Image (cartoon, rainbow, N blue to C red; front, side, top):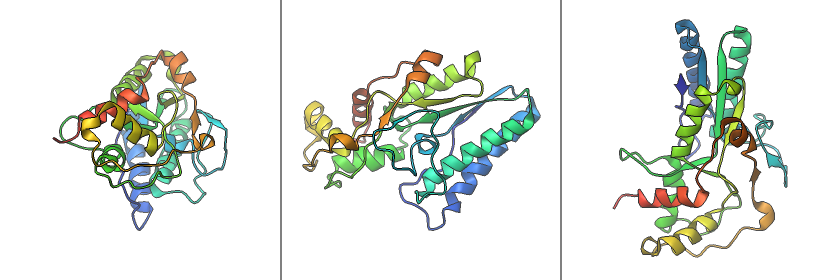
Length: 239
């Protein structure tokens, strides 16, 4: 069984519980239903949000052993994903042997869009850059993963015997800033770049470092490049 749904608005709600409660309780409802139906394994879509926030760890290479500090001053969405994942692990531990949980922790999900539904990663990054709404390079960087590779790692997590009880960070190699995304579009899709503002590059030490080694080695997962994922998003925009 897969559980992939969680609220992800572009702006924080006035009350953080508007995100935390649905994320946590929704995950627990899925796990309870799976237990009652005799489902052997649940694969839960968490997020890098549950791994890499709330602590100042410059130069640290984030992996599945890291956890976000939910007590830090962090956005509601990041806290909601952390709380929900922690609750899921606790629930499964309390069930004893027999119920399996695997967690996937994707970074920013890009790639081709189907069904005319545009996710927060598209609206908040790709669309905002293409429409010239991003005037300055925000002081953070982020990982990128293609939605097709996110689907693939979920399937591998269902089928792999070694995956049980594990977290898997889903990211392509490296990280990007808004400047990097803007420059990639200018170079590779110049016909779409007329409104893009001139941004300043990020300092090298600002780039978030992450490792997908566990996902690659344990699940034989080989994601597309961040450039391919970003350009697929650009190509999916409304004409």
